[in-house]
Amino acid sequence: MAAEGGGKEMNEIKTQFTTREGVYKLLTHSEYSRPNRVPFNSQGSNPVKVSFVNVNDQSGNGDRICFNVGRELYFYIYKGVRKAADLSKPIDKRIYKGTQPTCHDFNPLTATAESVSLLVGFSAGQVQLIDPIKKETSKLFNEERLIDKSRVTCVRWVPGSESLFLVAHSSGSMYLYNVENTCGTTAPHYQLLKQGESYAVHTCKSKSARNPLLRWTVGEGALNEFAFSPDGKFLACASQDGFLRVFGFDAAELHGTMKSYFGGLLCVCWSPDGRYIVAGGEDDLVTVWSFLDCRVIARGHGHKSWVSVVAFDHCTTSVEDGEPPAEFSGSDEDFHEQIHFGAGVDRANSSHSRLSKRNSTDSRPVSVTYRFGSVGQDTQLCLWDLTEDILFPHLPLSRTRTHTNVMNATSPPATGQTTTTVSTNTTTATNSSGTNGKDNVSNSSTSGNTSNSLPNTLPRSNSLPHASNPGNSIMDSAFIATSVSKFATLSLHDSRKERHEKDHKRNHSMGHISSKSSDKLNQLSSSRTAKADAAKTLGTALCPRMEEVPLLEPLVCKKIAHERLTVLIFLEDCLVTACQEGFVCTWARPGKVGLLSSQNNPANSPSGTVV
Image (cartoon, rainbow, N blue to C red):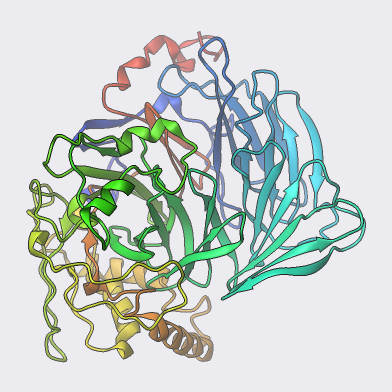
């Protein structure tokens, strides 16, 4: 489409982008939305969300898609890159009164061509179990709102279960339900089962089986999203208090924690092998956390506003054959015993077993690439590569690295000085982390020790200045807000006007101004509170300083929508995004774009249906 803002390239909506594997292209005929294709007035509505399920249809077209727009919920056959979308024939459409759908999830275990189980969470706190194929409503949980009155933020089936599901609320509580149990006619009474730092788990006291089975209270403020590990044994929770907390789900034990650089965490996801967790939120960053080491290993900056979704691309993530390098403290032999990504933890998803293959006869270092993506309120899509120079910084590099800024840490400059080096080569930035110091952070199974600060010899970014002391925690955040722009299109000659626009957007997104600009007292109070809270953790293992961990640059950073982005899902032959206007877009992977032909365009058919 035509560029906006006087033809500025940075404001143009992109319809394709290029990575090392080729060109990704937007398939305009595969766009899903409300049947009238009119942009949705999203003010005051809940984020658009998308869920997929495969029903193993014998016709080979077994993918089904569900998405919510405002008060409406749609269920379609998803044709992806194969055929154009036919919006005139939804399998099911529902319009709700008095409440809005906020999230949903299919149960893949029970899905067939004749029946699917879809959970839908609502803004008033209820959860509905429906079958959009049979057009039936099976059950309504928390109908009287006796369990929780706050908005449902996330709902997921427990992996491997046909009846258990977990629901998170903006109250900060999570509830475990069984579809076979009722919710009762009175408010539940709870008994403490387990308690730890900033969390507690209660059982429901009842003479007969009823919902909820368990209540989790996690952190302070809303619990924005949770994600099960690939094997279903661990649960990662992203909370509004800025903490990532990882639990052993069955034992309700806290495995480890991480603190955002600033503000709340909004999204979280696991790598396909379960070794790494990526979280994003109101600090405009994506943060990579090692599950084994329980520590932050990298941050990524490319967004100019809150990060709303993070997701790993299981199709592009790879580990080439070779002898794997050591990642954590211990002998090489110890690590070789655990390099199979399922070691110590049985992995349920065998489709990712290729990640653990290696050739013991080849002594060259293994080549590791984890691809993940993120979308945000800045309407941008970012793709990131997490490579062995970040994962194994103490070993020599096997090859030149791209889009990663890492250099040896040095002592901070004198007070008042800033050292900022900008790389204008966005395609072949040579990495210099091969001589980084040893990883001196010991392994930790819990997050209780927040006083162990990271060593000064860890690799630092060459794109951000040093922080001179812990008291400058807010200054660190302010620097991000005012001095760092999108790396993929970073220019040394940005105009003052462009800089001012970026500063305004970022300062607003990071909460430096209150919702009411005239309320100076609240603004000052919240600033002091945020500064005090940040000072407690900044510079510790919970929240390393910016110069203490590598800073990733995005492989791709493109504006792809007019409204904030709320969905990013990687599929085998495409990736799917959605924006708050209610448009669900399909981006064909390289080599897959030719599958759509003109005869599949509904506009070319007199009846408006797929030929």
